[in-house]
Image (cartoon, rainbow, N blue to C red; front, side):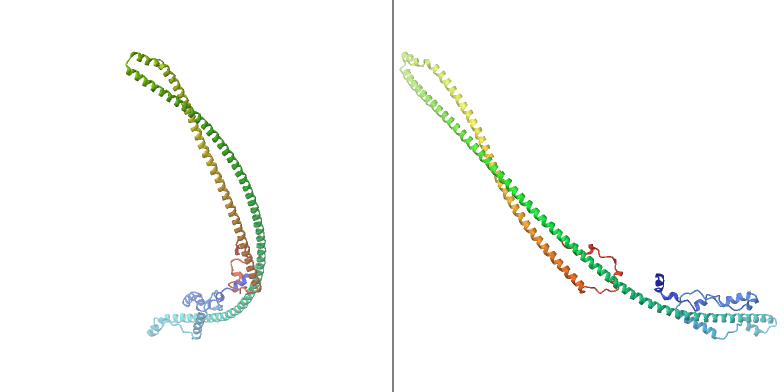
Length: 435
């Protein structure tokens, strides 16, 4: 059976039923119009045999209306034909006028003609009703036959659909099982590959970390030893230079102190001698004698020379003092340099402490990296345990599907034909496993 025949079977049976009864009869010309048309025709019309009216076009009408029309037509055919009496007939008979005799005869002839036409029309309507009734019965039988054929075809198609649904379900189940096994195998292979890559990355990271730690420790130890040696050498040089400068400054200071002490002693002695001379001069003045004055002034004849010599000595002392001041400024500069060197020593010590702090930070970072490595290993173990648990759950679900515990009872509404896509399940529709 082709698709057009199947579509014809699924159509509504209402389209197969013809429209019979009064609706079909009313399509013919009315009795009055036929009478007028017949009056205008020639008398040759009565010589022609009565022909069967062609059946009206088939259209559907309800059986109740058809039965009503049939009953109405049967009542019309069973009743005797009434004589058509024009409305002017009784009046003409009652009047009995002589002038209307010819008109009455003409009207009676017309009434006879019309009665004949009506009888012919009635017989034709009876034949048409009989034909339509027979046709309606035949169509009823055809309808019942078509309904039986439709029910048989519907049952056959339902059985065929159920068989196809069962076969499709089996094929989809087998395809789903094959796809699931393939995805499980692919997942296991990817898991093994990821586990191997992760293990290799962990080993490489551990190796690189150990090598970096060893290299950093070696560089740090070399840097510390070099800095310590430089610091010790610089400190020794600074201490030696400081001691040497201190000794030279002490020696210069002692020499200067001794020379100044000698000068002070000399000046003190000269001051005492001058005071003694002044006292003697005052005593000579008290005596108020010229000779004594001359005698007293005689020792002072060389006072200017003594003053000149004293001035020269003072200038020499001033020069020595100036030189000592210059040396003192140089010593102050050296002391400032010593302060700068001490600050540099403090900076070096601070750098040393910073290096020690960096060493501590590197050690803390190495400990943190080792802790992170341990945490990563623990996380990897947890992931492996979770993947094992998921694989066990998948195997259990697969076993349940194979044993039929989770096989769904498929209904026509849940069949693959009524679903969106009958193709194989896409891997993207499966639940992703945690990575």
